[in-house]
Length: 592
Ligand code: FAD
Ligand code: NDP
Image 1 (cartoon, rainbow, N blue to C red):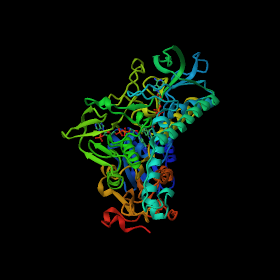
Image 2: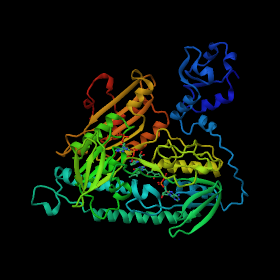
Image 3: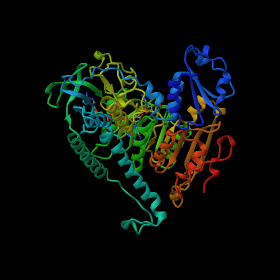
Image 4: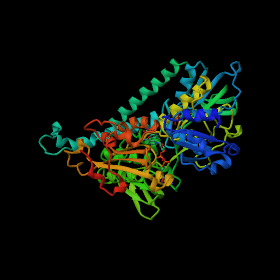
């Protein structure tokens, strides 16, 4: 009764451990009713304070206040870190009345534009909830002329071909570098005391493409089974309830719908320097008939480093042009370890602080690249991986009042709602969300449930695990050490780390000088909430997924290290981390 019981209840429910925290909401004007801070002391638990307006900046002083979070937004951010979906956030989720009525009279309840990860997931879920749904998917050829089937980026030109090329390159490396130490000899090489390999690009490419074609087919079947009408057509808005749909032959039709979902993803940003059109992108690399040969990868994030990694792993001469740093936004120490391994072990060359300033075709078919420092070199292939731009320019959304971020053309919106009440957006096309397949899928499913299933659960974009599939993989969940320090201050952050030799590398001469690395970033104050987990080593994606679950439950250092490990694995390093960075002790001092 003292403190706005309704909101108090909501916030209390947001805490994983109700007994150890209490939350109090101080609304504008409440301060006048709040006469005695000792009134709060009837609870033995520490509690968290937040407020709005003037009270947000002037919390009352009381010993029993455990921590002051700041205002409303800061509190919601904090709640999101602790629990998802957090009821406090759910309460915030005010779905705009988009005018949808059962007897709307349009052709469909929902038309999804884009049949990639997010669009297909939303379409199937909405149809399963009884909605009449159509899904348009149309692939505009890349500037180099490449095109593909249903399923979007992930299946055709993203995660799937990338991971299979990566797997092929790891296999090649394992045969070349590890197999001799395990006594494995390739039959035809038994007489020579050395293993050599040659990866046949056309075979690898063809097998991967066949697999992808089988997935394209399965997706069509699944849409049909779920009663989603699949249209291989390009959609453009005419008004808020009508799109024009144009097929491959240029035939046009009109489709109306009560609601629309934009899930059109993104496309590679082209190189803007003179001759930039000679460069291919990730939309083309997986389709090349012959090996790319000596390759320059431009860019230093996920796509460039992953492609550089698998090309080097299958034996090609690879250079990466790094404009500034590797893997912007990731933990600096871990990113640098990825770069060092690629340089030392995979023999990838890094040209740091340069960008291509001109590309020119030579008579021998190679591309001569002039770099910003004036140096030149020639390559068989130049792969531009300098970011992705949302495919919204020709969607006709500006006439609906839908705003985009001018830097990347991604749609602006909260809770997947655009500025037009009956038009929604998920996946890579939505600004300020991680460009990852599982994110697009989950956001699509949750949106469909809110639109057609009465759900109020928002998509939670916090603590999403991710993995960079470089020759030494890097996975993480939560924030980097760098971000933790800038957010909480160096004195309030504790880092536990360990550098170790994965057991499976220990026999191999080629690998025994390399090391894997694990680190957790925690709040220094008890109960040492874990802010981020980072791992650089074999099978990183497999290692991190489970930790992601515990991060969503508000994991603490004690809970982590009280978990019994699985021996002998790399993952157990994370539950046994004990050396703090602040101790100055060598990270290589731990380990079994
Ligand atoms: P998309 O999958 O891009 O689908 C959009 C679809 O809409 C496309 O088929 C497009 O042709 C179609 N379309 C566009 N405009 C129209 C229109 N007007 N009418 C009809 N159809 C239209 N993510 C991971 O989680 N893990 C990874 O390992 C990973 N690796 C990647 C590797 C590469 C090389 C790339 C490029 C991306 C990778 N990603 C990865 C990211 C992942 O692929 C994307 O986040 C995901 O595909 C986004 O899904 P989406 O539904 O938003 O869009
Ligand atoms: P990013 O936007 O992540 O990175 C772009 C890179 O290109 C940066 O290194 C940037 O450097 C550099 N760059 C930008 N402009 C130029 C230029 N003009 N000349 C030279 N370099 C330039 O893009 P990506 O294409 O790598 O990836 C897009 C998204 O796809 C990722 O964010 C990720 O979410 C998703 N993805 C996920 C994968 C996974 O889950 N494993 C794999 C691949 C992609 P600078 O730092 O200086 O800005």
